[in-house]
Image (cartoon, rainbow, N blue to C red; front, top):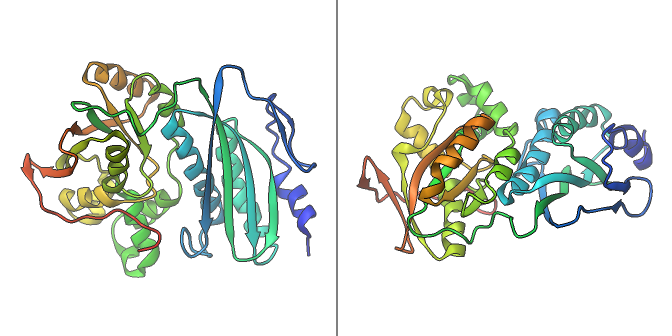
Length: 322
């Protein structure tokens, strides 16, 4: 049975990518890193725990992708360029087949972002993965939650709701019989990265957040930090055709889009005079962005469908209430 150092050497020290700003990574007590001049370092830590964020029998390649994608999404929300990541992973047993799949998903995404694993720790215990990711953003250009102004428009990237449907498939075997169930399950684990979009939004978006707890929850964080209100138009929420067929109606799909967590799309606000610039930049990047609402001075969140106010009580995702 392989020990800790054998596992590190075989699976985590084999990444071919070597960044010039990493002077020393794995093999010593600490990594030695060099940050570029005139930049700030954005840092985020996230944990994925078996039974909470994924089932133990989930495809390990998808788990590896999801673990890193959730961290990259935090950098995207700040407009930061991914650079370094460290990992602490606990395993009940040194399952080399599981590690092979996990590393395939993890390093495929890391390499595509020029993101180097710089160290971490492995230990025996319940299956869990904790990552700390670092990225660079030019001085004073980070996207924050606190800059939204009355009159700004609310945008989201991509389409929403697929992750929630995928979670339903994971938790309810009967839903595997519904249209597109397998694809929606894959999308739950394998979110698209919006790091490049986040960097393009620097100097254009007035505020930004990644959608990890559901749009209806995450927009409230922007409202709170910016001291504003917001109107959201549920009939404008972008949903995939796969989700519409799964739900059997577009309105139901848009209800999923409102509350779906772990989407890792971006929700951001844009002053009206910069909207066309944002649309053009997103189009050139090949990313769909959709206007779904506006910032108000009401200090409350109001939902609309076809310009009629709704009284729906919809909550986002909460790990401690799920």
